[in-house]
Amino acid sequence: MSVDLAPTTDEDMLRDCLERLITATLDRPSAVISIQRKRSDYSSSYPSDIITVRLNTGERLKLFLKNFSSSRVPKDGAKQRRDRERGVYQDLLAGIDLGTAKYYGSVWDESRETFLLLLEFVDGTEVRFCELEYWIEAAGWLGRLQAYFTRHSDRLSACDFLVRHDADFFRLKAELALREVSQISIPLAGRLASILDRYDWIVDVMASQPRTLAHGHYRPCNIVADVNAEPVRICPVDWEQAAIGSALYDLALISDGFEPPVLDLFLDAYRQEAMEYSVAVPDREELRRVVACFRFFMAINLLSRAHQREFSEHKVTKIVDLLERLHRLVSAGRFND
Image (cartoon, rainbow, N blue to C red; front, side, top):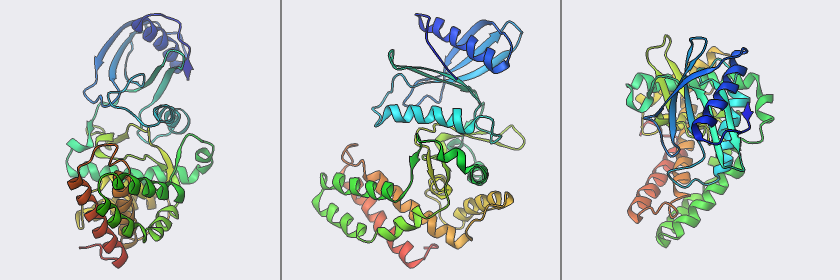
C-alpha cells in the first residue's frame, strides 16, 4: 500500500502514515498514541530507523523504516533500485511464509522526493556476525525460495521491475569490465580480453539454469538470522538488485571464499531443502561447476566498476589473476584445487 502525504513536518507525516497503514493492516481503527524512533545499527547507504508504535488498543508494534529519500553514497539507477525493493516486498513476498519481513506499506511521493518503506522489524543478527552454521542455514533457505517460485513462476513473469539475469546481462557486464580496466591498464585489459574470448560457454551455463527469484546481492551482510527462533528464521533484506535468475547465483555469493569440503556444506544444504520440495537440482559435482561459473562472473562484475570506484592497478591485477585461475578450474573441472 502507498499513501499520499498531507502533513507538513516529518513527525506528523510519519504519524499520519502509520495510522493509515496500521489501520489497514490490522483491519480495525487504531490511533497512534506515541512513536519512538531510533536509528538502526544496520543503516547502510540509506538511513534506517527502528520505529516503536504504541496504539490506543494497548498494542505495540515495532517497525523498520528504510528511507530511500537520501543516500550516503551515490547509487546507479537509484529510482529503479528503490522501486524494485518496494515491488519485491509488495508484490512478491507479501503473504508468503518464507521468513522475510512483513510489508506494512510505503510513502512514495516523487514530487517531494520522499520514499519511505515500512517493514516488520526482525530482531536478529547479520549472518556475517554469526557462526558458520547460520551461513549454511542461509544457503538452505535458497532452496525454499526456489521451490516457491518454481510453483508460482507466473508471479515472477508479471514483474517487469526485476533485473533479468539472461545472456545479455552477463555479456554486458563483461563489456563494461573490459572498458573499465582499459582505463586503468592496457596490459591488464589485454589479459582480460584473452580471458573473455573464452567466456561465451560460461555465459551459456549461467543463462541456462532454472529461473527463480534471485536476491541479487545475497551476501552475509544482507541476511538477518533470528537465532532465538525455532527453527532459525532466515530473513534476507535489501532487495534492490532482485532479479529473475538462478538460485545458484545467490548460492555463489553466500559461499564466496569457501572451498571444499566446507563449500560442500553450503551446496548440500541448498540441495537438501530444494529436493525436500521436489525441485530437481544438479548433483554436487555439477553444482560445484555452476557455482564456479557464477564466481567467475562475480569477478567480472567487480571489474565492471573498477575505474568508477577508483580501483588500484594492484587490485585489478589480483582480480584478473583470480579470473585466470577460475577459468582454468572450470575448464578442467578440477573443483577440489
